[in-house]
Amino acid sequence: MNFSSGVSTELSAGLFKKVSNYRHKLFVTTLGWQLKTQNDMELDQFDRPDTVYVVAQDENDQVNGCARLLPTNRPYLLGEVFPQLLNGLPPPNTPDVWELSRFAAMDFNNQTSSALGQFSSPLAIQLLQEAVTCAREHGAKRLITVSPIGVERLLRRAGFHAHRAGPPVRRQLPCPVGDNYLDRLNDM
Image (cartoon, rainbow, N blue to C red; front, side, top):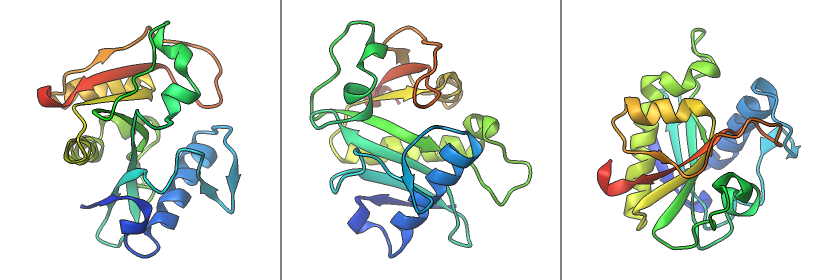
């Protein structure tokens, strides 16, 4: 497995397009999220020039995992779109708390891989570890994420310290989200 990280201009030629195509295939086509897309690319207002990406690629350079990292002192998904998930708490707004979003670890070339199983795969754990390392290198001391409940199990299985910043929410949102987690990087 090969991992790359950086802002879109730091990723190798064509890799950013592959990531946005991978996100479309997973989140829109496979999981059925109702997201605005164009040309089979899934991008939103949080895919900015300063957004940091972590990408997993196999030996054939096929993307089979990705993560998006954003500092919370700039606009981010939880703070802008889902602040109600914080149960009345103010969204973090500091350069040392970063958001992990668009986390996915599914190998479309592996017939036994599934969208539901992505949160228990060895690839998911590796990708999470790479994302934590990358966030830490950019000054993050904590991560926060809006995530399906499977991410909580992944965090615990991988030995990460995590706690819910708000109670689980079960309702229809533009994408299937459940809980959010605030993770101390120095405990990981």
